Length: 208
Length: 115
Image 1 (tube, each protein chain N blue to C red):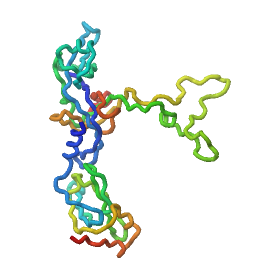
Image 2: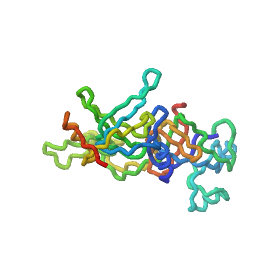
Image 3: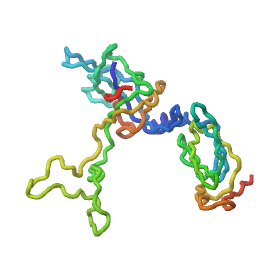
Image 4: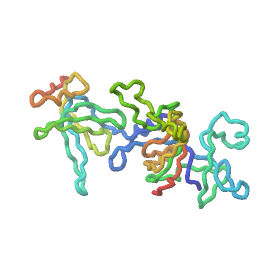
């Protein structure tokens, strides 16, 4: 068995829980994942299960060769197998591995924000808005001292590209599992835009 | 793929909700938990505004209780809201009746809608 799956973020909405409280949820579509490769310590040096999901028409030749006559899948990701029944090539894993109330981590690629200033990227306060300030409203301020050290320290927070990076959100509660529609409702927000691929796995730090 | 979210939203909607408009007088029955038993509590007042639509649909109801203005916003589709009855249809000319907050007594009266 594995403890993670490939899914697709569909968007957000809100639902009422059993107590009648409104819960913000992200809707994640998790269609049954196909086992596309099983890696073994003997052959590959470590053990892993490669899962594939989301069919596509356009694949490059190496990928087609890897999948052979199996469905053409857009995303392949490796997961660490856990003890229990083993998975073979061609098996499918569906979202039955998650149950209502479980804690999960969701991995995605955050929305790209382009070249962002220091206020947006690092939450700097910017400069004063009044008292004779000009062009200083969103400036970073000082980036270091003068001839000692005579350089800017590495890692100084500055303007630059923001977003479009792998982001993990930990410990989100599974609000509901709609098995008949292959849909998972997870409390709160999840990185990425709609229709973006996300990985859902059982929480590393908390077990429900 | 908005259809999946649409159907999740539709599932949460109540089947029978009367048409409610600003200016109407409504009685909202809310489930209240007291200790370990549940009972219904009614809140009657004037609809000040309608909120969002879909599962987040809400109405804000205002009444003056013991000389103090009380406004409560109810989620129409919430399972905690047992039912909403329209007591009286009001005839008003705007969607948000915030002007009622500045008025007391006779001035807060709303004409009844003629049908």
